[in-house]
Each structure stands twice: as C-alpha cells, then as structure tokens.
Length: 178
Image (cartoon, rainbow, N blue to C red; front, side, top):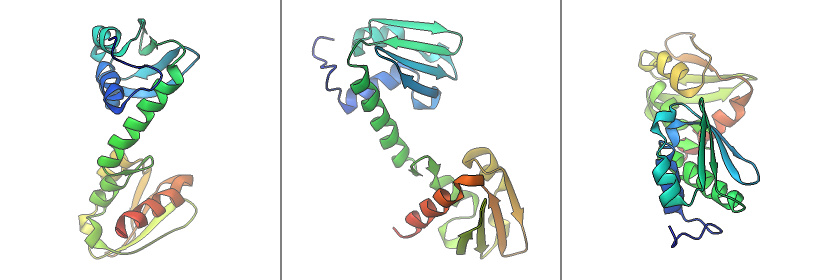
C-alpha cells in the first residue's frame, strides 16, 4: 500500500477500487463526503474489504444494508474524481456517449444501416427505418431507458425517452457521423 499516492490516484488505482466494490455494474449510486466514498450497491457480497483496505488505502469499510462507506480521508475528492473518470472511460468503450447507451439503442433499432432518418419531438425519437421488423422493443425498454416503443407502420417508429430526448438524438447522430 505504501507505493500508492492517494493525492494523485491513477487509472489503475481507480480500477482497483472498482474491483473492490464489485465492478462498476454493482454501483447503483456513488458520491462522497469529506472523508468517505458513499455508495449504494446492488450486491454488497461482492465487496472485497481486504482489497479496499490493503491495496487501495481505505482505513475502514462500513456496510449497512446496501449502503457502503469506504473511508479514505482527506484525499477523497481526488479518489472520487479518478473513479468517475474510469467509469466514464469504461462506458465510452462500451458504446456510451455520456449516460446514453448508443450501442444498445442502435442494436434495438436494427443497426446503423437500418436508419433512413431520425428526428425528435418533445419526448420521442422519431425514426424512419428500412425495416421495422428489426426493432427490438424489449431491448429498447429494458436496456436503454425507453419507456415505450410505438411502431407506426412498416417504416416509422417512435421511441419514447422523455425529456432527455434531445441528448439521445444528438448521441445517435454523433455515432452515425463517425
């Protein structure tokens, strides 16, 4: 542990903390206070207290239900920022733009090549597709945050995302322009 500089945590350090917490998929919520990481985890049995204490410099791990506090001391802001950067980096590699899983949305609408045009209104992504039979409404609702998928006809589909629709459309356009 002595070779870790907590005031300037590296990407490898952040990966180690995430491993000790059961990986990023296990984290439902993360914030910090003056000295602690404060988390809500999906499965606290995945927490590796020994790794967090012995390999990341935590002085204590407190588990209460699904709430977990990992005590690091006054370098907590730098540690939290390193973790946030690592999560953002991992998400980008998985097809996310910001918090939007563009890769899954494209999969749910039948791929990039299935799109003829896209626009949006206040809450809906409005798509003209080559083939609406390729649309996977279940995937769009369960894995991308859509609340509803409406197939209008054999070429037109509306996917309801609510008020984040502008961000969804822009993220898809960004991916299509690559």
